[in-house]
Length: 329
Image 1 (cartoon, rainbow, N blue to C red):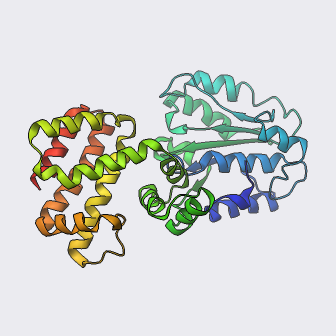
Image 2 (image 1 turned 135 degrees about the vertical axis):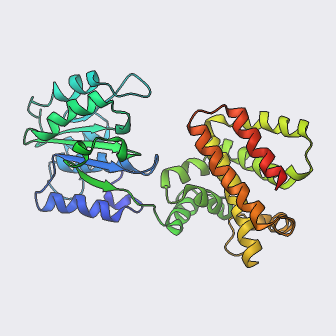
Image 3 (image 1 turned 60 degrees about the vertical axis):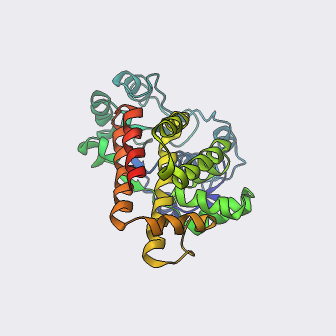
C-alpha cells in the first residue's frame, strides 16, 4: 500500500483525514461512500494505518512495526469485518466481530479500528445492533462503513457518522496515470478513461483486461453493422453478448459512449471531443442516417436495459428489446 501522497485525486477526503489527526478530532465512526473501485478500502486502510503508526504523523511511515503489520494485513488492532453470505452482512457477523470484541482494549495501538466493506449489505438487524455500538463506543474505537450507496444505511446510523463522499477523479489525471504508470497506448487510455468516469480502479481494471479488448471489438462491430443484420444474426450476437454477462454494464457503457459520440457529432460536427475519434468514418455515417429522436431513443433504451438487468429481469429478453431498438433507429 502506498502513502496518501500516492493516491490519485480525493484531495478533500485526504485533507479531512489529516486535519482530524492533526487536531486530534478523529471521529468514532465514518461512512466512506463511492463507486466500486473508487478507492474506499484503500483510503480507509491508509487512515487506519496512519492512526496506528508509531511515528504519529499525518502519513504512515511504512517502517514501524505497526505499519509493517498493517502492510502485511496482520495489524491486530485493524479489523476487517468479514461475512459468509454473499449478499448479506448478518446481525451475527456484527455481534461476533464488532460488538463482542470492541470492549476488549487495543492489543498494542492507540485505537481499535473496524473496517466494514460493502456496508450496504448490512441487514436491518445488523444495522440496529451496530447502532448501539456507534451510539456508545469506547473512547479508542473507530468504525469505518464503506459503501456504494449510503442511502441503504439507517438514517440513525448516517446521523452519527462523519460522511466522506468520494468524488470522481479528473479524466486528465486518470488518463495520464494509465499512459505513464501502466504504459497504456493513448487511444486505449482515452477510451478506458471515458468509461471509468473518474473511477481510477475501474479505469485500471479495464485498461489491463484482455476481456475488455474483445468486448470493445465486438461492441463496435455490432453498432456499425446492426442496421443490416437479419434476425438470426441478431440472435447469434445476443449469444455472444451473453458471454460478457458478468461485465454487462461495461458492455452497455461502450454502446452508450459510441451513440453519444454519434449524437455529439451530429449536433456539432466536432470530432475532437469524441471518445471514439478513430471511428470517425462510421460515426459520421451513422449521424447522417439517424435522427436526433432515434439516437436519444437508443440512449434511453441502454439506460433502461441497465435498470432491467439490475432488477434481475430475464437477460435475453432485456437484451433482445435493446438490440431491436438499436436496429430500428
